[in-house]
Each structure stands twice: as structure tokens, then as C-alpha cells.
Length: 503
Image (cartoon, rainbow, N blue to C red; front, side):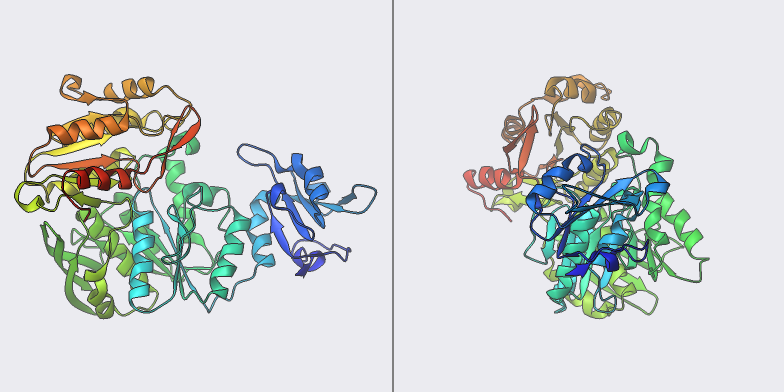
């Protein structure tokens, strides 16, 4: 419980004596003693629900205003019992206000933020896995859910709203979290949702086309990601110097005395502090030599593909920057599990002689499609298939680019549906197919399950089928309605029906 006057003291003097026991942005979650935070959102304006929140028992309302002269002003309703406090540009300060309500002990938990177009989920999950294998309590926030490692609760966003995030981080500390790995989206950075998080380490994976429907262009998209490396508590910046943007940022950040810049590379970049050499990809994963500032060792990873080696390097580098011992981390790498829906393999038990492999991956950008196919090529003994679609109500410009990537790096292309949302599946597919140089060589089947089963029927021993786009998701959104669809479960079932077993 906190007095509102103490909560707001960093911004202005408030004379009231009300106390609150929680903050919420959702009027439906308001209880007696809640502070309802009313801000304009992307789809709805919370200020329209002030009366509802008061009826639910709100002790007070903190409302966004764009008028600086209204900052700190108080009105009362109904009949003078519930204060409505105006806060100038509250959306920009919400993270700080929430942090004031749910304070953190910075020395208790090492907060690691991961940003980039692809790899955020894998890196955050690998950080938590490695920490747990080293007997440290780890928490994760991101696409697969929020919670202590192994007990994630699904959420709707990569980066939660500022209030939910502050509550969750405080809860992690009460549960004893020593490491917290958090995916940080460009939306979350632009909207200021993570401003008050005391990140000690920030990780950049890569930058390629995505979310241009929101950011407008690549420069704005990159600038949004770069914000993470300006946070005041930041001690270390970990950057993928195999990426052109990562290399540029590394050069810039290396000149800043307030933080340490660490470059990582699978290509032995001259800018890398942590890098791999002599990688050998095989059926069960990859073996490689690793070098870091104070030593050299071996990686034996069960994860598929070069970009997963890069993701693993990012996780190792982040934990190394946070003070973990590299030799101890390398000792537990063979025990790592594939991240759900990230290059996750399902195969028949007789795969080594005559089986076919299905690989479920979340790849949903042109670069992610390219990288996933390149990664699987080194493991593939025969033909490499790509079964994919594009989401509706999202960046339409990437649709032909995804087709181009699939055509260039796969032997067989099957175009199907992803999440059409409110758009026509056929119209989306037509835009995808427009990017193919040889559309007659591709197979088009709008129903996703049918597309996968047809491809599997036509595949031969040694083929790998990449099922791209759905990953961990457990739904397909069609005509605005979400229906159950778990591609991981479907892949396991169809391989099991073929006298196989999920690996």
C-alpha cells in the first residue's frame, strides 16, 4: 500500500491522503483501493472508462492530459468522493510512475534486455535455461509468456504494458529471481513501457524488415531498437557484429566510457570479443570452438542451425557480461532444449534411414525465412521444403519478399495461410505469390493443415520440411476469430501417425 501523495511526489505536490494497494490500466480489474490509470491507447482510450472504474471501487484516477497547465489538477466525481488527477503526458511517464508504485531492489536481480528483429525469444529462453542449469533462479518476460523459468504464463504481447511489467518484475523479486531475461520490442521502447526497468545488460541480435506498418521506415525502426542502449543503469552492451547495424552500434558504443561493449560473432569478425570457429553442423546439432577475452573452449550444442549458434553466443555473452563463468556455462550447454516453436524438430523414429523431418519455427519475416532455411540446409540430406504464409492486417510490403526468400533458399515452396485476421486468405496469398519468379513451381493450398499434409505426402526420405510462421502459437486467427491450432502438436501427431515419435 502506498499513499498517492508519495507516489506522485517526484512530479508534483498532491495534498490528498488516499492510499492505494494496486495500479491498473484495465477498468475491469479495478477493485476497492485501486488506482485506475486512464491513458489513450492504440485501440481504445482508457479515459472513456473512468466512470466504470469509479463504480468498481477505484480509490483514485490518474488521467493523461496533453495540456501542461492541467498537470497536477484534481477534479472530483461523483459528488466529491473520488479524485481524478491530471498528469501531463502520462503515457511517457507511466513506466516511472509504475516503478514508484512497485519498487525494485536493483542489487537483487540482474536484468537483461534483448532487442532485435529475430532471436529475442530464443536468446531470452536460453539465458534462463543456462542460469537455471547453473542453479540460479531465472525469470523470463516475452513472447512465450512471463514467469519463473518453467512456469510461464502466456501473454498477448512481447513487451507488457508498463504497469503489468512493473508488477511482474516486483513479483519476480519476491520469488527470488537472480536473473531476469526480457524481450524488449520496438513498440515497447517507443511507447516507453520499459523506461524504468534497471537493465544491467542489453543485447542486440539483428535488424531486418518488420513492423514498418508501425514505424514507417527502417531508420525509425532501428532508432527504436537503439533506445535500449541509452538506459541509465546499463553496464554492458552485447551486440551481434555479424549484423551491419550491430557492427555500427558496436563502434559507437565502444567509445562510451560509461558502459562496456561486447561484440559476438559466428564469423570470427574482427570486432568480436566472443566468437566461434570451426563449426561443424551435424544431425544432432553443432560443435564449435569458442573464444572469449580470457579463454578458449568448446561448444557442443543440440540446437539446429547457424543462427541458433548465434543466439547461443548472445546468451553466453550476456551472462558473461553479467558476471557468469564461461567454463561453467559451456559445461551445461549440451543439456539445453530447443525453445518451443523455434527450430523445433519433429521426426520419425527411423529418420536416419528413411524418415522425413518437420521443423516448426516462428520465422515470419523475409530475413527470418532466409536464416531458417540456411540453417536447415547444412542439416538436410535431400530436399528442403518451406511451407509458409503471411499474417493479415500487417506489413503488406514484406509478403513478396518472404516469397522471394523461400524460393531462393528452399527446393520446394508451399504457400498457405498464417493468421489472415480480417483479410481474405486468397488475397494475401496472391500478394505472396507475386514475389515468386517461377510461381508455377510453387504449390498453393490455403488451408494450412492440408498444405502440410500434402507436402508430407510428397516428401521423400532425407527431406526436411520447414513449417514457418506459427511457432509456439496455439491459435489461427481467421475472419477476426481465433480458433485453436497448435502447429507443434499437429506436427507431433502427424509424425506419430506415421509410426514416428517427436524428438
